[in-house]
Length: 353
Ligand code: MRU
Image (cartoon, rainbow, N blue to C red; front, side, top):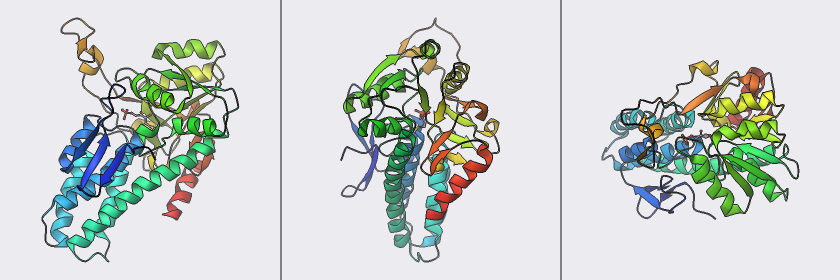
């Protein structure tokens, strides 16, 4: 088994993360024994990608319980409420973060847990379940999506949605991995994904590791390849999908979706049901993270703009559902009307919990 993006060290009692800031130049594991440092690692993007952030938050809550010296359940629950607030504030857009934290708070509150130690044990067990479920359902989702892929297809992909974006396996790239495992010959056009270059650094690294054919392209080249008829399908992930099928994903996804529709190329977000936020009616209600302007004005610490240049840096955008051909989930591929069919997919997975 490959190293998971996030895992608990059962000997040292630490949360461990593949440090994604260091890839592709070096492969390093960062270990955390303080949940506040886990929250900071999410903010600083040591770990990133919606399902990976969710898995990390699950273990972060287990770590917070372990760090606490509370002798009784009530005191521990109060401290866990503080930990939940700190973890939830780490990044705003990916709903998997608050989804995992809320699931852990529900776990901690269960009436059959009598002592603080009962809660500690239950939170670690639940964090492990969240992580294991993520891997299993992402694999299932990947094979659901692989039905869309024909032998010889070229897939355009934005950001990184592979094993590094989940606990393992991933979402949109998981579809590519599944098609590859089925023996289909596929080629991926990889958007570099400025400003943090998740496509160039992480997606190219993952495709190389698996021996899958790809070409890295500048973000602004995707329209050219679609117009030239070189793209069969666009696959992307999502950080939060609203009830009506509007999809928030890495900045630049909207451009790709509009160009895909203009060129008759199908556009499929690949979205575990934990990323669907049925509480939000439409995408304009999704909070969009604004990150430091430095990420735009410099590359790897070297300035690319005149001194004093100002910049805007939204980390995500919203693609309205009218550009979305279908949404691949672990419950199957969902087609319009999304308001009805997405809810059914989410509810069918909740029944299994
Ligand atoms: O800012 P990031 O790197 O966390 O953004 C990640 C993405 O936008 C992914 O496409 C998204 O999380 C879904 S795929 C797992």
